[in-house]
Length: 488
Image (cartoon, rainbow, N blue to C red; front, side, top):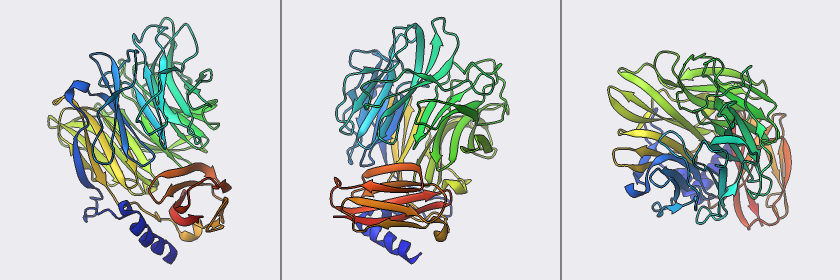
């Protein structure tokens, strides 16, 4: 324990952002700082989505319906840059409930988009990519390779090496046989494999055909989160791949609400994977009102572990919708919008250790005409963006929290050795326990250099890394510990 405390003090000297102040009440763990508009109204505000670059700064994309364009703006540490158009000569589908998607791996950025008209087989899913943190992008590359079918709702994630994994909904030429499929790349988005079906679990062939989905990836595990449609039961499910999205060989329900609905709710699930647990958030209206939920599922057992509403009963509540979740280490945040007492609200739940659950108290991020939102986390920062229809712009707000360096783990249960230290060519990571762990390494500047999931021991070739101080974060199902090493 003394070693971790000393490391924390050293980290506060080298990592100023690890020593951020936060509110002193028992539940207010976030200090909200800056906020404003990402761009002018003329750029539109449909369906903002967010990722972070290698330095942890947010990048935001959104659509403009007037000319069917997709824009990106990145935060440069001071302000958001002038938006750049990503779609070239393509026209791209967007609305206040669906649109393009973004994922990042360090300074490698991918954005996927659906060409219009959506209902035409010749209108394809495309991807653009950046290798300089979103400063410039390549021309669009075609993702879907099949002909005679219709596609929509693209989503993207990155594998551990930074290759893109793209999901999209697929139909036959008559707009039937709705299903989710996944195509992946092994050359950083230059080409894509033939898509593989990721839905169809629970004796259901059809999916909810106007509900977007989410693809998430952690190590070798890839999860396709979607809303099902089995005889009008609209619960959310996950298709699971254990080979980085090449094949989806299993799936399970993320909830047991059995919501029977004749119409389409146009709402998607979202999720994160930490160690062997899938945390997912979604909306369900089985109670007679649209409520937002958090579920925990065991990936080894392929089954739902628990499910709960994000809030208790709120006076005057008429609906909750569009929940989004993000994590950084063991910390996690959930945002969603709701209407209570005829007032639109954008709310956020936070925890420094998701394994321990979320606080019962939430932060109010905004009170306005909110139609869609997203959240991202990095280096003790929480970033929230949303579409504000009163101003016609994408708005943002930043918050800060103090990251946990030890979680709630018994140090003897999360005992690791790293050697040699200092290291020149090879860094060895050894666990004294039998549990798999996740590892991530950050340079003293805050940039993430390496991340891997579900490993037990490893030897890293660091010969090409710059000399300096690095921080190794190691996570098990019990919590997180941090170790420092020197590359020389």
